[in-house]
Image (tube, rainbow, N blue to C red; front, side, top):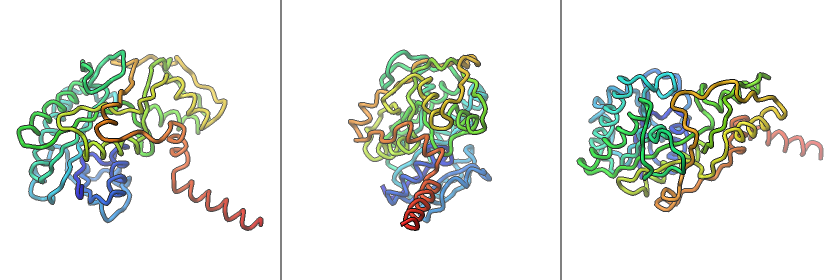
Length: 318
């Protein structure tokens, strides 16, 4: 892979994928929403080219982008709980995904990798894989499932390798303000008491960097037509995740479990079977949940500065 096109690059996995691509020397064209303040999240790098284009205008980019090898599609409108049942918007997202495939073909890409979601499964009770029957309930989940199927069919018609990656729960730097992880970190840092559901779900968090590495591996070695489920492969109760995060941010602080009801369409069991993904691509997750939380609390630049200060102090003391 020498050059890639990435839509929706300013989210958590998107920014991490941009960094992974650059680390492999891949020139990346990042297609961003015009004027988005989140463009600033993309670290300046000569390999990264910002292309401002609304998701509804992908066809306008045909002939304006250079030839590329891989196309990663993360672009999507209304992904939060409040917008997931905006059915007209979600239906439009399916069309935009087909536009993305056509743009990939026009740019000479040989592989199209789409970002799916755990919402495609609906309410499941066992480990999730690409072969697990999908019964989505929310408009968002239905649209993601339809986009995965439609783009696979269109890729087959156009001669592109197609891979669809259903992400369970990812976290890390550049996470959305409304996610559970962001809410817990923010509230605990401010000395507040987080109000939570009973947190009885079995969950499977994966760090953005590990998720980005998986997408890169799928683009390089994923099998045509495959749907991969992406998580850590080591699920545990959501309550345990919340308590471990609390112990990193504010040990001993109160967590108010049961203060909130579960939201509509709430799945109670999200666990990824990552065997097929690992067998096909050689990918395995590397970062533990605690390591990921520590990185949020102390970003790499801040951690490096603290390390330099400590070493300087040690030299002075000698």
